Length: 207
Image 1: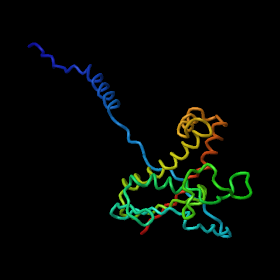
Image 2: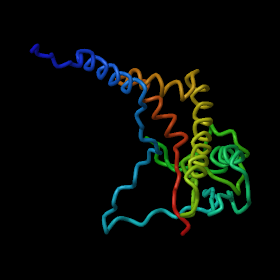
Image 3: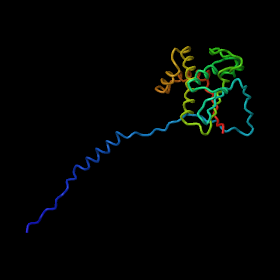
Image 4: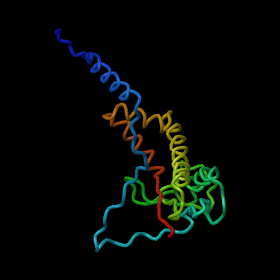
């Protein structure tokens, strides 16, 4: 009696198919990237540290986001699109003398400010504090939008000043430094712009 051969499955190409599927998933799968806001937390102060300086109310720009995502600026309801220009007007007011700048003993007036110099508003960019308060029920999206508008206000002022001093924008200088991190001269210019318009934002929850 003749012996019948057991049929075999040709699995030679299975490894190739599995490899191609692996390549396909590697190419088409997107990797989640963490996103957020970069913030430097204040250092813990020693017990015998001197009390913080008293800040005049006119140097505080109060922004509140309530639980309904409504925006109150200086006690009045506004839309998010309004906050950038209002912040610029406050920071750039130049209504008095500021804190001493590096290598200075006494504070001086802001000669680069182009604001209204209203005595009822901020004295100097290095005294202008933006107080951002939010509720625990405030949506993350609204909070980020407000943060972005405040960031745009500082960037706009820094771009203008950099253009006047160096003929280029602050944003372009930061981009150039990211490509040439060892450029000490460029870093000094950026640090100077940042010291003339320091970003001072105080964040807190209302409840």
